[in-house]
Structure formats: structure tokens, C-alpha cells
Image 1 (cartoon, rainbow over the protein chains, first blue to last red):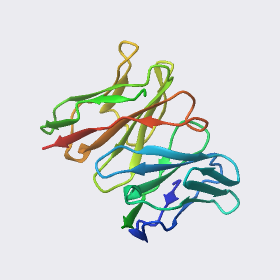
Image 2: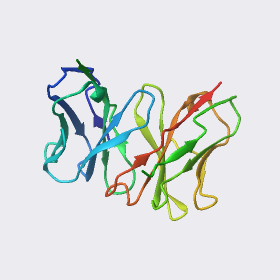
Image 3: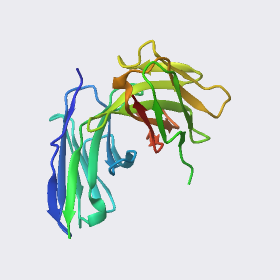
Image 4: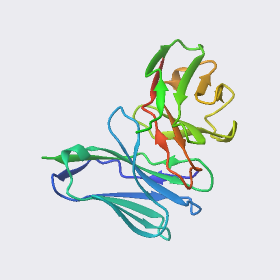
Length: 110
Length: 115
């Protein structure tokens, strides 16, 4: 069973602080890694993709990938109340199927 | 901005009835998907579709499920005889490239309630 694991949270951060989210995956053949944001009752919205080891920055978001440790993380800098959502880690091996983690709920407090 | 559209947004049906959920993927996308999310649980892959055929399906996608692209724009998911456990949010998604190299764009979902 190929698994993607995340801490369910909630991760409570004060406005303006850094939120740090972690994700581990079990399939060593995984090739592509994604972070989606999901507001309650809404669909997943892609915020970051990362395909190679290291860091990738996009605005206030930084994704980090370590394939040797089978670990991917997401940092949200200068957290805003609008960042309050569930963040889903998703992984693909060869093929089309995205395997999602259960998500980490983030609460940004003003 | 192009988007994936889904109808209906919410459907209530009786157990044993057939349901068809409809999706219009983004126009230049080639790969189409259905995922579902039972309330409070993970988003789960159901099926991927490319070049007018299923390219991959999960264990969930059994004989009661089928997909079709009947007219070159719509992409449908049919559940032949609904069960209580089919109650979930069903998301359609599309991409320009295969899922391991491309990014999926999700529709807003169709909430199915089976009574």
C-alpha cells in the first residue's frame, strides 16, 4: 500500500509567522510531488509542484524535497488569515495517479 | 481563466439508483480524471482517461462505475446502482500532460448524497 502521511493538525500560527508543513511518502519510485490547498467544502487548488531534490520558491511558499529521506515539506512565510485551510500533499509515481495525504489543517490567527 | 466545470453541484439519490456526474475539462487538456473525497477523509483516485480509454483505475472503480467522453467536450462518471457508501464529493480534473509530469486542475466538485 503506497501511503502519503501528514500530521492532521491543526497547526496554529500567528499572523506573519512561518507555517511549516511536513509530508512523508512510502513509494521510493515517486517522481512528482505537489502541494494543494483545500478550503472547507471546496476543491483542491494546486499551489506548488516539485520534481527534484532541494528547494523551490514561489512567492511566500517554499517547497522542499528530500528523496533519500522520502520527505517533502512546505513553508508558508508571512502567514495570512486567508492561508487558513487544509494543505494536501500529493505524490505520483510513473503514470497518472495522484496519491494524496490526509492533509494538515492550518489556522492562522490574527 | 480556463476552468474545469462540473454538474450537478449537489445530487441526492436513493440507494440503487443510477447517477451520472458531468464534467467539462479545460479545452486543450488531454488527460481526464475522477477523484472522490468522503467527508473528512482523503482525496482518493478513481480513474484516469486518455485517448478515449481508461489508462488507470483504482480498486474503488469497480463494475458499478464507468466513464465516457461522449462528445469531445463532456467527461462523465456513471454509477450504475448507488450504495450508501458512494456518498462523497466527486472531483473531476484535467491536465495537459500525464499526471507524473503535469499539473492537475480540479473542478469544484459534485456532492453526491445517497439515501
